[in-house]
Length: 60
Image (spheres, rainbow, N blue to C red):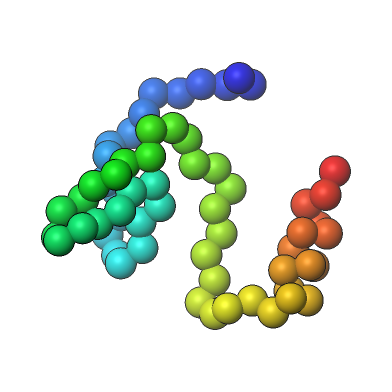
């Protein structure tokens, strides 16, 4: 790996969106055992053109 770091707290979200775990019957379950990086969240469904533009920006 390029770098490593200690894991942070298991639940740092304060709103309805969580990345890296699920919720079932009010319980927090199925935690992702690993790292999650470069997450982006949008307040709408992206069009095909918007997805293509985002992909094009990140290509090496």
